[in-house]
Length: 261
Figure 1 (cartoon, rainbow, N blue to C red):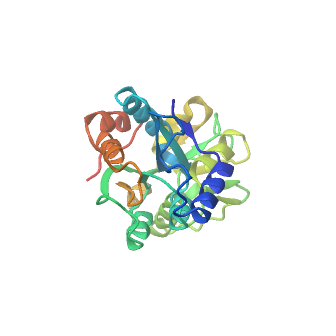
Figure 2 (cartoon, helix red, strand yellow; figure 1 turned 60 degrees about the vertical axis):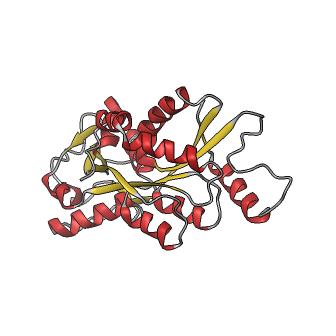
C-alpha cells in the first residue's frame, strides 16, 4: 500500500537526515523497518498525484515487499527539501527549471528524462457564476482569481501566458501548489483559478474548465530522474522506467497529459 508523506513527517525526515548523517544504528532511507520490506520514496509534483498513485499500484503489484511512499508538493518546495538533505529515491518535476536546480547541485542519480507535458486551463465553480469565458476575463475588477506563486511551475506558466497575451492579472491569492489553487475553486473561495488541464479532469463535477488559446504560450515539460543518494538505485530506476514505458504513458495519457516532445 502506498502512502503520502505528511508535511510534518517530511520535516522529521529532513531533520533526521541532517542530524544523523552516518549513524550506524539508523535505518536506511529506503528501509521500511521490517525484514524483507522496502520503501521507495518518490518526490513528485502535486499535479502528478492521481496518475503517480495509479503507476505506484502497478509498480507494487510486480514488486513484492515494496511500498511506494510519496511526497506530493510544488516542485520548488520539493527541490528545496532535497537540497537540504531530505532522503528520497526518485524526483519528478512539473518543469525543467526545478530539475535544473537539482542537477546544478549534482543531486541526481540518472540523467533526467522528459515523460509528459501539460498546459493551463481556467477552473471555475460549477455553473461558472462569475461568467468567465476567456483569459482576458480574469483581469475583470472584483473577480476572485487564485493562481500559483511565480516560483511554482504552474505560476511560472501563468506569468508567461499573461505576458504573451498582454493581460495584467491581479490575483487575490498565490498558492504554493496547483492542488491548493484547485481547492480554492472547489470550496467556493475563488471565482476562478489557473490550473492544468489534468487538474480539471481529476476534479470531475467539482469544477468546470474554460479552455483558452493563449495557453499554448506556456507548455510545461515534466522530467524525472533517480536521486544520487538513493538507498535503492535499482528499484528507483525501475520506477522511472515504468513511468517512461507503455504502462506509465498510458496512465498519464488517460489523465490528460500530452506526450513529451
